[in-house]
Image (cartoon, rainbow, N blue to C red):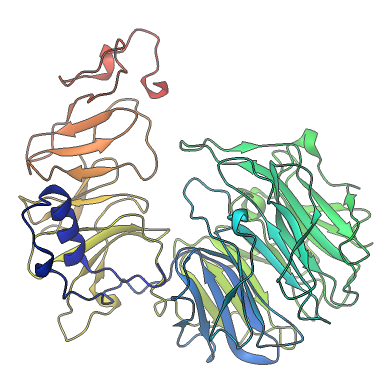
Length: 545
């Protein structure tokens, strides 16, 4: 979705059409039009960049919301990518030599349990007014872009590749003709993709890139990590490469993703945030990558490295370093120590920091709740309530009037939004949480307007504002986006999908009856009668079936 344009009445009609296809004429809904109903809080955003010569101008690439642009320091964001066939964005880069040349890499560019893929790279030559597709379609996830500061046509693309399988269109690619053709310049095998790429601003023939060997599984937390990860350097513009090892963890240490940054005013100084089980942390090199020293190994600054893994250096002071994680951390002593700079409250996960080369007080910060801008070094920030780019997992509607639309929003919890506002328009004030998990299905009870079910069996009551856990007990295996749906045939029946199918038929939701439907997990026989965890054979683990 380019913007979160959720028209719930149309969604409910489509649901009815699936159930009663013969009974509804298209004439009943062919006049309906999509309209914006919110919520208006930003969604997961990783791609982010500013324009050095235009200090008020910024671009963001939203993981499920397309590309957005502001020309007034983030006061107003406008979508500029909605007419393109993909809305999943992982990287955005502006050519330093031409502020109208913008490159966009599609696909989230992250390894995580739930993600969206893209269809390659795009380019604009008019600052986002129009776009052309540049290929690398089978790369699926473009996680990094870097444009030569001397030549707008020379660009590198870090291609992560298929998240769930092997493919050869992954690794680091280079184009010297503005993306019309691509050459694979750094590649090890079909299981190892490129995660990041950066160019030395003082000598653009020096390029650094990170390779990341990883794969997602079809079940929750089923990720695989290989031995091909590593940091590489080229001194001839990307033609030949050398792996950097001195002091860094290696494959035997479980090396994963590496985020790399060059200090613009001291380009021999590099910082890297390294993901490794026992040796993870912030590393620094003062000799252009030949030797590395572990500066800070606090888990809070490098943990969950496959999801974060980005570090940025101040554009005027090589001792000021920004690191992103569940908060954004800042060091003023060359990486020896970090303090939380921007974070909770807010429930944010931070992904990208961009610092203006001419004015390091102007910073763009991208997180799971959108992007914000500061012009005074972090003392005050713009709002993220002006970016309806929410990463919603599922959508449902209730039967009230006016009806409400519900879903789980990445890192923002559940959301319930009225289909029309009380004062003439829908604003962020019409958004309310309904007690469900952020990744959850939300299922409004068709018989009890005040009850909203969500997640693995929570029940929210509008009349009290309280949430109660009424879900099943026992050891079941769930995806984070476990299906939770009321039957369209019998409104008393609520289904919950785990490694078995669960349902409740009591209207107050306080007792859950478990049933296995067309799934031979108990004694090898599919059953529809009630099942409890105690019926599994002694010593067996029902979560493994």
